[in-house]
Length: 392
View (cartoon, one colour):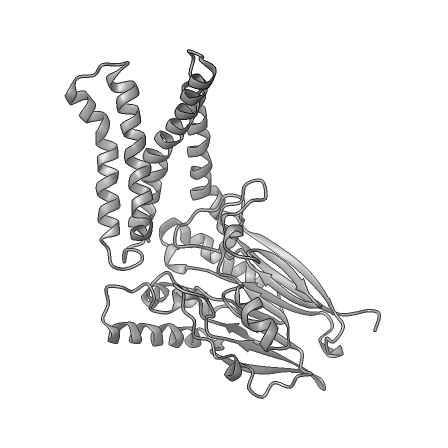
């Protein structure tokens, strides 16, 4: 993870420190060299931490505590210096343009830094501990009559390897909340683990406790493959991929890997289709849509489970008759401020309900993340109630 952004990270750490050194430590305070070095120590320590994290071949360390500590230190050490420097630079440029002698950026900077640190502290604590139960009602012309009022609970992007220590109670609450909805069917739309299936071992009992009348159905997300196991042999990667699938089945889940199942109510039926992950590089693209739709009649009412929402436009709409597609993957950016999310820049449908010609896509904000932070983008489970169009 850190290796992908190592250059911007180092620039964000070192350039503000150089600015502060030149403009404050040397010109104004006139500190002696050894005092200057003391002021540089936090930046140099974070530089070393960044380089060390970047040298890890896997996406994240085996112990998720190291990545959490890394982002906490970034928040407390790097972020305030960076924000102050930005404010100071803007104020300095304003002074040059207006020929003013007072840099208001130096006055505003500490307050901006304090607010920024406060936001991230909230995100790492209270923000990630929140939970929203969202209810979505869909009115459908071709819903089989016997399925009128059918309820589906979706959860996504659990990343259970993050729920160690005090966060265990969050996982337990989420599982209990999913069961409490009393839905006819529970679906999970990918990313159960961070990197390895061994993360799931400590939570077997909790994950096995999910129950619904028509069962629990799941698909794999990009983290459920061996994509992020860079330091492992191919044989180990293959074993881990198979273990991920085996564990989900041991939980009592119906793992759908390019296959479908038919659910019956009286003389009516609906089809649930689940596929391999369908993403563009660097994420896995393994879907076989023909295999997934094998035996599905063009008149069937189809519910599609696919981790990556970009598959809706690329594969699902043109090649299937799925009326409802449920996805995750984006985490709604994990940060939403004034309605803006970073994932809006990279995904056409990044969060929420979308409709095209009577066909629906819902992209869940998910429950967790490798980095346990949520600001505005509240973790959620979603309860869908299907209604037959009353005009029919």
